Length: 84
Image 1: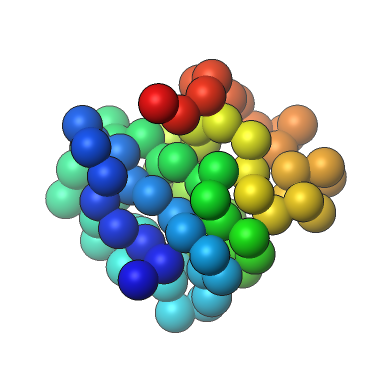
Image 2: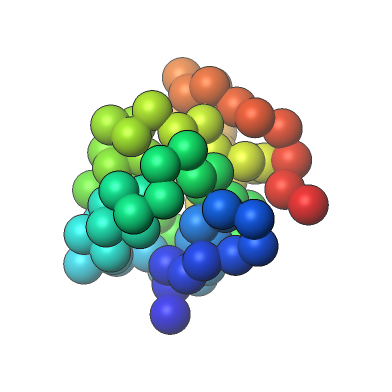
């Protein structure tokens, strides 16, 4: 599963997060207000998933595993630090 709950109110994005994962992420973030999004293990991130992250106001934890997102989009987002 590419979107799963981690420890202590953390939602983990893992592997290739496709467009279909955006709804799952939205449901998890709605069920856990204030949850952090750990995207360090994400290898590819669909823009729909990124839009859910941005709309939630959640600051992703750590560097994004998707190199393109990390290089071009992450500097535009607030960051909380590193996972762990």
